Length: 535
Ligand code: TNX
Image (cartoon, rainbow, N blue to C red; front, side):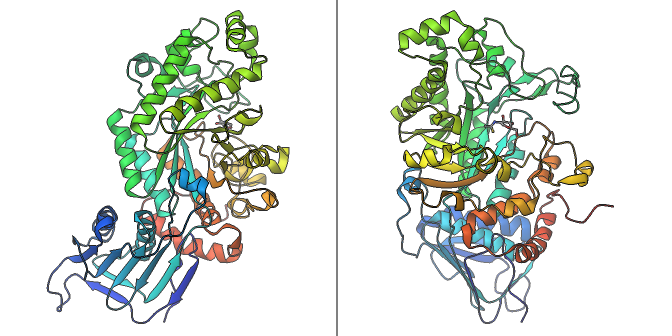
């Protein structure tokens, strides 16, 4: 008997079984050509997802029905265990599941649809590359994740990615059992979210006149390619992405980045800014000076944004950025100083935390909560329910904002740049010169895999720790192929880190697992970075 197949991320428990499960489309004993998939009442969506994979990836006709007796059966049979309350509040459930393959059938049991769709991704990996004739060795896999929030972020502002590209990104994430897609929708270089009543977003903020050629650090920042770049999603496309993700057990976290990173917005609506002028949608990278003012019209717009997000995205959290807002314009503006006095704000840090409090309150009024980058808790006084995404690098800069968040009871997502920024080079040293232009710094896959994300927090109250995620900032990632190259296989390593927590196998074992997994990515047409040494 061959060794058991290597599933990625590494399952918690795999046991060998007896005879394999086999399906032959034209076998002389088959009464029917199609593969029967049956499911218990709550799992119709999961069964449809599985049928879609079997039809498109394995070329097998599938017959799905509620009930029992199928060659593949999905059941909501496992008893539910409580999940930590911070995760429950965010709508994450128990993802525990069991997959058993025997000569008689493949049976998947889970607590809920989320667990069932994770098991389906395991089965999808087991069946990868098989066409018409299917075989799964006899086995039992019992699995569940170590961390509840397992995210992948994508910046569609620096480079626009179409809704079909976004869906593909989400599907590949789901293959690796990620359960959260963080959609960074707005930034200085483009705005991708339509807001009813604000037509200039689509006409102006969604488009820039060109894109910087070369690297932001070593070039004339006016050297652009002169090619108009941009785009905005329709509400229908957004709903499609959300539904597509939901079918895969993936929540969508939308981000509208304020009060900094708003150069595109202020170009469309200069009245929301502090200078009265349209700065132009940014064509280079780096941190701009443009920030929002405190006028009622600006807050009115933000209210419309909260409404729009609440309407389009069912996930509990709404992300309102909060990173890298420069205080310069606020300090220089007499209007801002006057409004500060009216609002009882004292220093310019107060302006940033005013936005955080205001956005959290508006979100809470609609039954949601705000999450933002860690800058939002530099200043005290944020509501405990406001969640924090820790992007600073505790290892290098020794910022304590992750610990501060936990001590304050804020739900926390770990997104440390030195371990999870997939816009960094994948190779250190001279090999870097062979890599496509990237933002800088290096994050080899081994370094992703080596992330001991809980170690630093030992001794802290971790009840409000939600999980972790990777960031894909796209300043230097203009195409879908390039995106594949930057994300894979590093996302495979992170998937395993988040799924197994601190109990994971060593690098050599993971390297074997990855070698078995990469052909699956080949079959899906993923242009990942190859691991062969360069000439
Ligand atoms: C910092 S992390 C940013 C992004 C950039 C990224 C580049 C964060 C919250 N802000 O605006 O794209 O670095 O690595």
